[in-house]
Image (cartoon, rainbow, N blue to C red; front, side):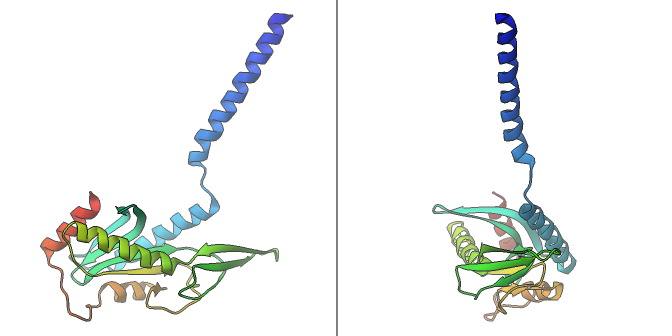
Length: 201
């Protein structure tokens, strides 16, 4: 009888350990709907960017950058003769409310069944301004002093603000990365290669 109780207890412990392991391992592979939407949005934006690239343009994706304890990941970086461009991608569904300089925005979504959900999201314009600063500082530490400009591409074209930082269409992307800077700066092929190398390190 003691043997049966011991076997049942041992079996129960093994089952619990198995469940714990399955949850920990499985959680690494379970992707939230928000992350799935984000990944989908990044794929769509990358495809649009590739459509407008010209000879000599360099596209890098999901580039981690760290400088002086500040870290970020850049969805898309385009390096070309006109500059270094960050395109942060957002695939928010629903309606967004906020101003360009607000720290956070309100996202409101109404389901087909009529339920209303709201969520606070970080202002992506503020995020891309921070990314401009971090990338510029990172490149300066590598001896590269070139113009960095960031944009937010809204897959659903639902930005609550009109801003020089906001892109909604393929044409917007093309214009943003292929318009010469006001000072007429030009990045040569050797410098583009140095920038690419610094970002791939």
